[in-house]
Length: 275
Length: 278
Image (cartoon, rainbow over all chains, first blue to last red; front, side):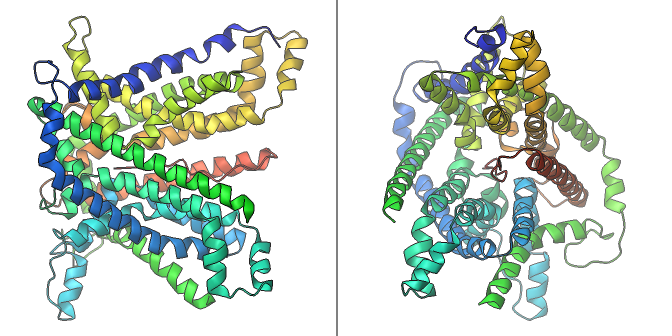
């Protein structure tokens, strides 16, 4: 067993080479492009130009935050209700929940747009009951709705996973000790599912803040988010450098917030031991 | 409380499915209209199959999904074997963190970072790299590998080490034991990794958007260019077909998964290996 075989020593080589070439090297190029000008000379001007995009960063963060909060408010009760069902029913509902995650985001967004558009089914319905056509596509609400619709399952799934691990005796103990339903939720269920909530928030926030298709389709071109800005800068070779700088800053912001969230989840795990 | 929770669940699921159901339904609408269902027909499907570009994109998508998932499965399975045998915890952590980068990063960053690499590589005189199939294959394989490792590694971890030792004692060469003992044992994980990769590759839009060229279009890219300006009803038919395809694939993966669970004693977590889209 101590003799290392050929396979033992070389099985990792293809993956290691691939990772260096196609995971690490591309990220180095993002940094390189962010700090050089079109001729390859070192410069800080791309990073300096970012102040022009501050409002876009602000708008994207605001949209993504609102969408994340709505997902949490809708998703948490859903996860809780599913986890209280019979195991066989749980399995089916989770499968139904996961199915949309597998359908291309493009198609889901497109179908939502078709439903909400001016000549769409919803507006026809509005007209029939006399509210008249309501402009939905092209409003901030439509963009946020798109994010919620597209990413809600990503919130429910991790919360459900941490809820399904809860011991039923916690509920019994809470009841015995005089908790009512509401108190059981706030004092027992919620603290024990914080890790699930944290990973749900990450899984909704990260794709929401970096999306460009949702804002293009449902924003009707009137909302420019970070994703749109990055995408536009990479259409034209002369703006690659600024695009790389925006990508780099977004990546760093996301990594920091994910790290902070994970730290928060870890701290909470420490607290769990006392419970 | 029970009825209230039922109503809530039905409501959320209905909202989640309403747009997709409307889209599938109206793809069978003879008149190209979104608000009035006139006659059931396959008109838009026939229209779609007369569209040579769409069929070309379908061929490209399948070609790419098969080759990238097979390549990723080979590299990923070998890597999982290697990671499992590593003694040093430090190296293990480093490899696993680097492997997880494509899963953690927003797709758009992965996409533009690869694009910059390819832009740079194509300026090298000794590298005749052109945007197209090769760049797409590299990108798709890269984002598939972590998912293959994720589904194969637990199988290696739960395998009894004594099986390999017994094989070696009985005169197997290490390579022989890999193909006759280890590989058959982890095969269910390999198969679900392959299918996961195939689905992800078929589905990817954001990363492909940055590393493709107009002469190598996949289905999602084709849908994107076609829906850029106005609604086209043959696109409804195409989307509906893609929904059906995903439905069938998901059922297959799920059956393979439950087959897995039935065979192994250790219960595995439900599969949540779903890519974050941006």
